Length: 101
Image (cartoon, rainbow, N blue to C red; front, side, top):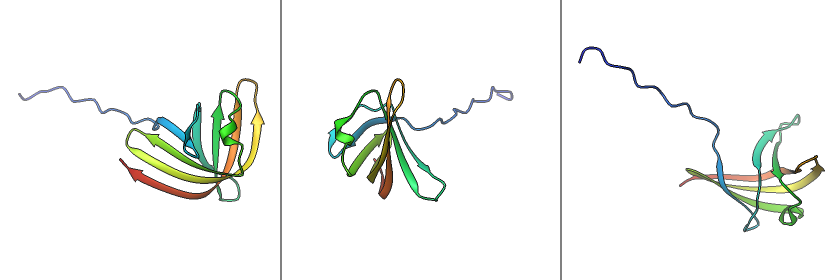
């Protein structure tokens, strides 16, 4: 065939997490993100639908599983905010490892 329709490229969006564990316990989270703040240190932001008792520690070891990765992040607690419909927890990143599954 001389003329053939071009295949459309699939756009890659942000990775979606499948499971989030805090100190070995699965928690229900709406969103998990790692961001840099103004001081060039990384911060973890976790949004939960309600108060999560498993995040009320000074140090927390997170295991985040996505479709093809496993992230192991160690964090120290910074602050928590109470928004209208959800809770936001902030942690400072102490250690970070990434594995492809």
